[in-house]
Image (cartoon, rainbow, N blue to C red; front, side, top):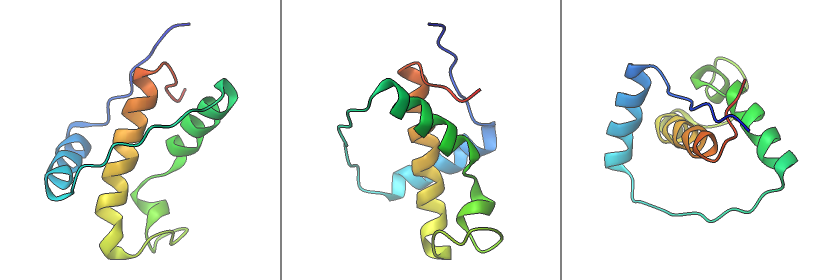
Length: 87
């Protein structure tokens, strides 16, 4: 399997890192099937700031948007490091 690493554009990395500094750290152990990991990678590929906030799906409140977006970026990176990068 070829591993491709997802790297968000520089401004997304910087925003995620600044948000990470504000958040308490949490480690989550997650066991997924191959299909589950592929499916999760495809799902989070489609989640962005617009779909999180009021412009689209309204999944989180405005106060939750920045930390949620940072978490999604780090989840994408973790999946990519495990070999499950969105295509």
